[in-house]
Image 1 (tube, one colour):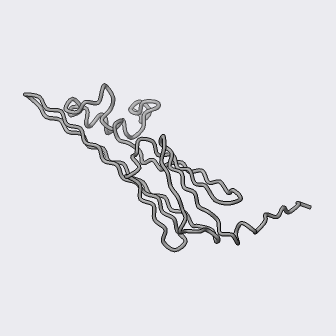
Image 2 (tube, rainbow, N blue to C red):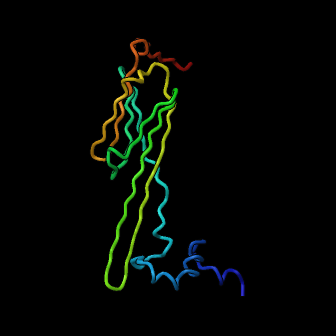
Image 3 (cartoon, rainbow, N blue to C red):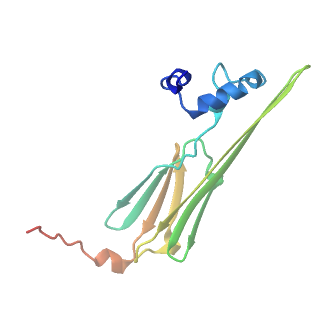
Length: 151
C-alpha cells in the first residue's frame, strides 16, 4: 500500500483531527460540520486613513460592537484603539444545560505624525464604523504638499 492510497485528495491536516474526534462530535452541536469548523480566526478590523487639509480621519470597521467597548489612548506619539466584547448564552432544560461563551478583542496602534492637536482628537461610533478625527495644528495646516516630477 502506498501513501497515495492513504491520503485523500483535497484533505488537509484538520481532517485528521476530525477523524480522531468524530466519536465526541455528537456531544457538541456542530450542525453537521466539524468540531474544528467552529473555531474562529482572529480578525483585525480594516482601517482607512484619510489626510485632509485640516485633519486626519481614521475609519475602523468594527460591526457588532458597542461604543463603550472601545478604548482609545494616546501615549507619546502612539494612538492605540482597542476593544473587547464578551457574549454568554445559556440554555437549560430538564435533561441538559448548555453554555456558550464568545470573546472578541483587538488592538491597533498607529504612530501619529508631527502636527496633531492631541487634545482635540474626537471619536464617534455609528453603524459599525468607528471614526476618529485628528485635527492638525495651525502650523501643520500651513505646510503645503509638494509634487515632485519624475525625470
